[in-house]
Image 1: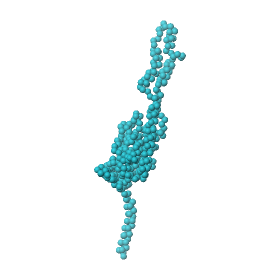
Image 2: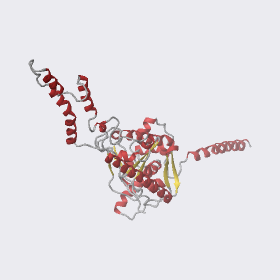
Image 3: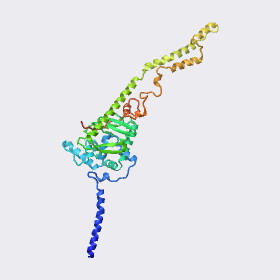
Image 4: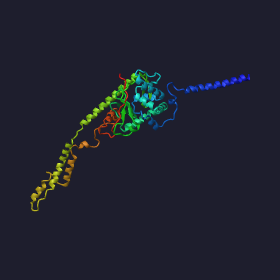
Length: 389
């Protein structure tokens, strides 16, 4: 009897311990398709560390970043995706593994990006951990990096991308909604003013959502959040409308600035020289008259008066002050002086700070290489591709 009681008590203790262990193991499980390394807690990164981490991709267009960041949370699936792309070179009909997470499947449209993430798996894993544990900090770091590049003139609107500046948010929108171009750049180079272009681009276009993605991803910059679950077709239409409006604003601003430059009067070097000679004629003549030899002592008083009166303006007595006044007046009315007044210039005038922050500012930035910018070079384009609709 004692032996049975002792055995029953021991089984009761073991059952109680098992009951406590089951929930713990269930909580510790990772969602299917996500490796433990990406979701495990990691030391929090500082703002500087985070900015360095996101630097290699911070200048990617928003639509691409919105799928790249979620895809980085499953680095092992990135490796699978790269292996699939290698096999597909010899078998174009090969279809991707349906078990791949949606962001990774979308990323297959950008083989160069997949290869970059697969080749540097340590960086991809660290980025994925940051996205999983510090998503808001990741989004803020991307904006901080963009602001630095924009400030030195290396992030500009061109035929491949449209830079939209809204308060503290900088968006990178593809100029053609159907095609995304992915830049290649050195993060340490683009944050410094350069006299030559600081980026090149992947040349081969790839169709966006070629593999029939059913989930769309987008940024909520003001909430520092990545959204997903949008209908792909609706999101495509929104992107097309947004890009078209931004492109029209940019083109209208360029026309306005060209019209203002054409309306400004200009002088050729010959005209400027002629104007300068004309203003010097009257003072020079007066000085020559003053330098004439004086009449002899035997000359009559009348001759001296006539000789002296020849160099005087009619109707008023001559004096040094009069001559100085004539010279000063002639110089003050020199033709063309109004064109060199302070505050002029091809882009001077009635622009307000609000206008400079609008989409029309992008057109101004695109013309900064015409002699009014010291930064030179620029940044604009993405290699990748788009789905034809």
